[in-house]
Image (cartoon, rainbow, N blue to C red; front, side, top):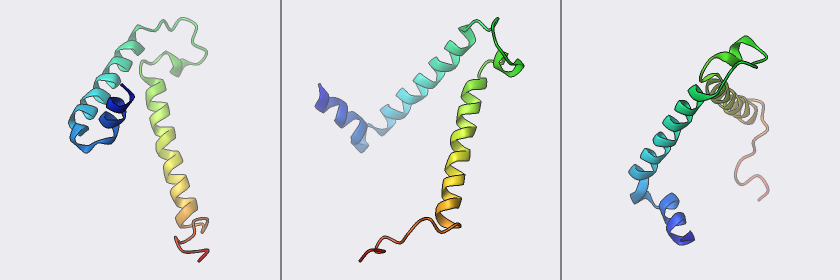
Amino acid sequence: MIKRLVDFFGDGKYATERRRLFYLVLVLIVIADFLVPREHAEYPWDRLPGWSAVYGFLSCVLLIFVSKFLGHRAGFMRHEDYYD
C-alpha cells in the first residue's frame, strides 16, 4: 500500500493523474468554502467566499519572492562549494 502511494507521488508516469487529483481537490475545497456559514465573521473580507484561499496563495507567493530576494540579492545564499 505504501509502495503504491510512494510510486504514485514519485514517479513521472503518474504526472497527469496527480495533476487531475490536485485539481479535483482544489475544486472540492472551493465548493466546500461556499458551504461554510459566515454569520460570525469578524471582518468584512472574511465573508467573501474564497478569501482564505486567495490570501493563502498570495502570502505563499510573497514569501517565495522575499526569500528569493534575501537569498540572491541580500547575499544570504552561498555557492554550492562554499566550504570546499
